[in-house]
Amino acid sequence: MRGETQILVVGGGPAGSTAAGLLAKQGFQVTLLERDVFPRYHIGESILPSCRPIFELLGVWDKINAHGFQPKGGAYFFWGPEEWEVRFTELGEDGTNAWQVIRSDFDKLLLDHARELGVEVTEGIAVKELEFDGERPVAARWAETKNPDRGGRITFDYLVDASGRGGVIATKYNKSRKFHNVFRNVAAWTYWRGAKELDRGPKGAITVASVEDGWFWAIPLHDGTLSVGLVTGRDNFNEKRTELGSIEAVYDKALGQCPAVLDLLVDAEQVAGMKVEQDYSYAADEFAGPGYLLCGDAACFLDPLLSTGVHLATYSGMLGAAAIGSVLRGEVAEEEAWDFFGTVYRQAYERLLVLVSTFYESYKGKEHHFYNAQRLSQEDRDELNVQAAFDRIVTGIADLDDAQDVYRRVQQHLHGAESGDPNPLANLNKVHEQKKAPMSPDKAVGGLYLAFRPQLGLRRAEVPTLP
Image (cartoon, rainbow, N blue to C red):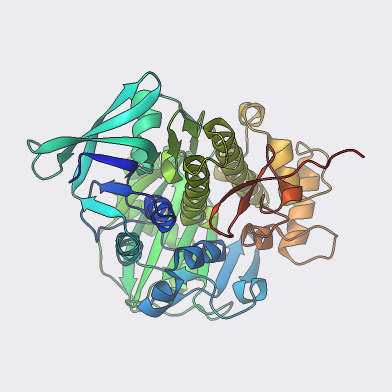
């Protein structure tokens, strides 16, 4: 492996692969270090249509389309006493806009594509330590994951930390990660073969079904299996695990309370063991610093209710590639490019954080502890620009504290009422429209906006001169 590089990317998941690939397409020297050897297992199998423009920009969309993943026609919700569908075909102009993916295949496809674009990818390498010149990281010491005695050092001009939930910079150096008071949940899941297809809603849809103490996902995959996961409160999960004796028993008991998903599994066979992960939501104080950017889960993490993980990863990767590219070409100063990146990425995260919390609050069984625990606390609201974030989702609500108004309006949107406000789930899958993202001079952030021609980068919005 080379001893120096222009840009070092730590992590080869969707955030790292996207950032690295888009930087290589701009002609920069990019080195990517990945701790694991792909393919490797990962959860987060349901992809939103909002990822498609980024995959097209990368030039990888046709490969995803040809791989054979399960086309995702939308989502179907059994939420409390109500149910409804969201059809993604109605949100796009042509064909399939999203997929249900096996992440080991999907992530390897993205990483291999970055390699083809010119990224020097080395797998099985863990970054053990960063070296700094003042506050600016300038080198990384690495070691082989299977042979820790073998290692080396690589210097760089810029760093993209896409190291996932481990978050090298945020957790080890800046110690700036803050957990929100909401979504302190646990996910427990496994895989089933021989499951039935859902008899309603869009073909290939993810099924989301609430239960008393949480909710289930059911995701059909192209290998004939169904990913079925339970999300429930951490404390409730631990109590029931102690009471019932195992994770499997907690999962099975909740499944017995979820007829919508249980019906899919009536003739199915469980073909994998249980997996568990804590779904805390968090964000670093800053998403950027001298010489570095945080992308994907290294910067922030959100509850999986609306399947936003890969969206945030690839979106931040694209923003990061645009910011670094423009700085290296001398088009904008590092400080203003970093401000743009941090502001736009944080707005996207906060917007989704508020949307997920509001979605939980729309559950009508207010007596259930789980759903009450998903509400943004006053501390959360003080730390976030909640009102601005909420206004970006649903216009016309003056006061987020007016819960009854929130419930009423959300229910209207979810059921297609013509109230003059957009459906929040439709908004979720149209985040790349110019009216939602800074992609035109009139939507500039800090005087900058995202442009794609003649190449990906940040452009300066010209200030009109007075006559």
